[in-house]
Image (cartoon, rainbow, N blue to C red; front, side):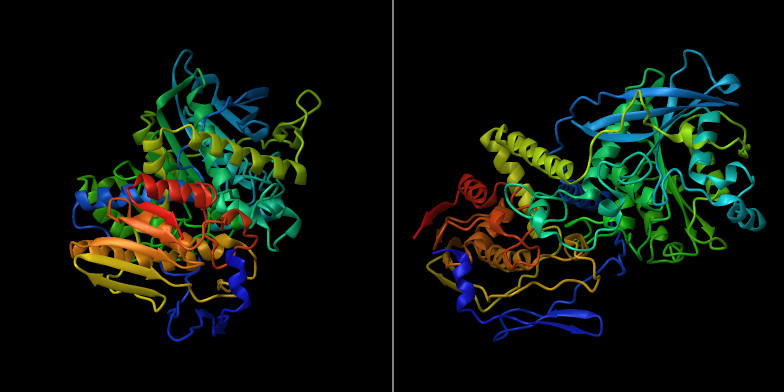
Length: 609
């Protein structure tokens, strides 16, 4: 009997929406009401009392970031096949067009800025800066009239170069002696294989992109394989570092990262998971308030129990700085709202002066001239550029449309569109499957258990008194038996109020219903172990996968056996992220057969009734 048959006779739970709060209805008190958190919530950073506690926390958190990005384990680094062409000479710097493949056939595009003239030192290994641009793209132009307003407020200094603030920071970094890569977000400028609408404007699920054989991004299948625009852009950033580090004129040990707004989000991510950057300026997104409104800034699992301030803290004790502007970062300098807590963490490391946040409340959301000056000072110091301070920008003639364009007749634009999207997700899935299959049984078990700990959320405190009417617990003669009855049926799981049909807006901040149920089982496993009891589990129809997930997440805990009513359920057959059995990542880590292998390898006997 397959699980879907249950829906014909189970009482269906209702979903209520009360003044902005979504609640799960109850049947006989079997499911608690749950208030869902969204990207506009409050995300405080609770600093541990000592470094030992922080190091344990940061290890778990870094694993969460990797899993959420679909990068646990890190994929194989395929050949970049990088092309650099079309050098343009300006006073004190050059610009070249760049494209390389983050995965086969998928191009990362951008502009490479290098020192020239009196700013160049022949034979020298230059420091490098990775510069994700954020929304608006590298072509963002205030326009003639727009820049006048910025000149009046002092947020920009030049009518010519000030029109293009994202290019301006890269030009100045090159003039200061840094090789700097300004690379495109998905859907911006020359990065068009996946459209801007798909990357940043997605709002409605596409049934034609759903299915276990062929699927697109945002589908249930993609989410269960942890494939997202967010994760692809993070991998693009990793490969962009590979590109920079491999340039013959770059010092691989002196790399900085800086971006603003959406580029600030990308800066936080790459600095959280990659050890190569030594200094960072993630501007405009380090906040305990709004966490990033775009689909490209959200991913399932990413911010459950954490937020951007704590994610930025993963860069500690390396030096970093940011600003507090008149936007969602405006309270960063207030105790309990972000920066004082970062300062406290850096103090634990003995480096309180290696983190800074400037009060720029007089400006709205920005990465303007005043902000850029702060970044130049930070990078001058920690990349050892050797310039006298203060550092000031100089004007330059802006780049023309042709000078910006990466592709031309000699370098044709690669194919994209719907077929490419489906081929990309399939390739990513196949590579992930091959990578996991190639691990030793011991390593595969360890990795799977660690992944399921994230999927279930063991880094988020689990209450000892977690209980549910569908879990029956009996203890006799030192043996605790958990009888998992069929959980209450649900027509759909609740989502946050955001009208865009994207799993990351809900599952990026909240445990799935599946995970919440598994956590209740895990609480009972822990209670039984604490009492010194042997543990056996019996799972009725519909509870099998949840019970197995709880055992996998328990990992080091001891469960002797689990008896399953049926083993035919498959996550890959789910076609909606609102299915009660949906859990992000379940297919990537082996589906139900993979769960059974993991649980068996952990020492639990698995049998089917």
